[in-house]
Image 1: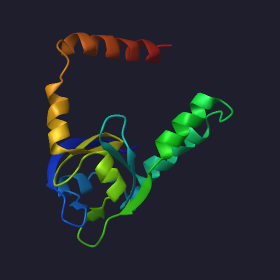
Image 2: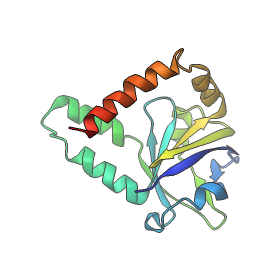
Image 3: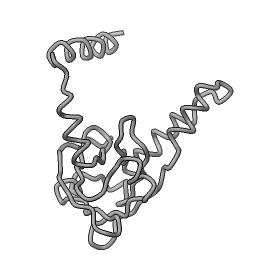
Image 4: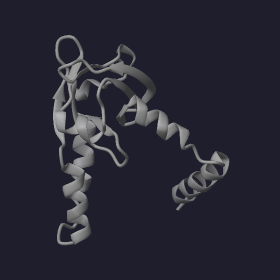
Length: 154
C-alpha cells in the first residue's frame, strides 16, 4: 500500500497542468505506472490516487449494495468527474477543467499527501481549512484515535 507524506506548494500553468514535485514522485510505487485517478474530495478539494490504489478503492465502492438508494447516491457522487491522468515527459499532470472549477483552483496549488492519496487544494482554500483547526486538537485526537484503537482490538 502506498504511504504518501508531504505538503507541496505548486503552480498551475495556463493550460491547467501541475508539475508533480520530485519529492512526491519518488514516493510513487512502480505499480502506479505514473498514472493516477482524480476526483472530487469531501471538502472543496480534489483527491488524486495512484492508479493501483484507485482500483482497490473503486472495488470497495463497487461492492456496495446498489439496490440501496444511499449507496447509489454515494457511488454516483464518488465517481462523478473521476478522470484518469498520466504524467507527461516532464512530470506534469493535466487537471480536468471541471474539477479545477469545483475546487476553485486557479494558479496557486497545494498538494497535501498522506496515506494513499494526494489532496489537491487551491492555496486559498487550503489556508482557510488550516485556519479552521479544531479548538482542542488533543481532545479530537483522543476521541478519533481511541475509537481506532478499540476497533483494532476487536
